[in-house]
Image (cartoon, rainbow, N blue to C red; front, side, top):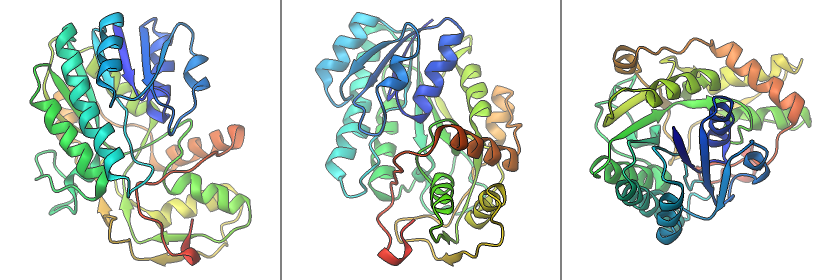
Length: 314
């Protein structure tokens, strides 16, 4: 198996690269390092690292032609500036088209696409079934949904994984690193009145291994989630308790206009069709994440949401 990972130096991509390397898989990574670090993949033995953007059609075509992957994991995404519509469209839409074209040109057996749950928008039912209508929110959600649509109509088999909040090494987005960093520094925090589902990295890697091992190429969408919803206030309490500051007060505010109050995916079809089920509990998932921060620290924190007012910054 020869696997090419776009966005392979990001949180998901780098964890995948490390896992596949241990299995002896030949690896190539494309990344522009906008929200990642080159050394994360350079330290993975034997991986071929190509610096550049998936929006660069010539670079993508040449890399695919030279490496000739059997499988592609499309993890590259633009999300760090919610007002950079052009940048999001270039990476998330044109980049996905370039990946589809290059995959068809070299006969890739299976493309695995990573999709944001923002594709569903403000859900009509919770937990959200995989056949829920698409009504994406924000530049990130809109552009990722367009990219997924192009991929699913391409000439190659595409499995699109609509993924919950995956927690694991190098997580740099969301409430967990934010609360950890601020509480460690003695800074105030606030919680939005939102509910999300959280998934441990090992559960996610187990699902990915299942997809990579499919005997026949497949096209379709799958929700990847524990199926359990937890409030941001619950996350705060887990972090505060872990750090020994459970008495710290926290304000709760309504979600911003570009945020979705409740996002909990229904993974039942994924469980039935792929024989996979999340096994790590919410509390253990959070504790594992915080233990990683204890050992490695928290670096830059990104968000696909618009900045909140100054008095509420997290």
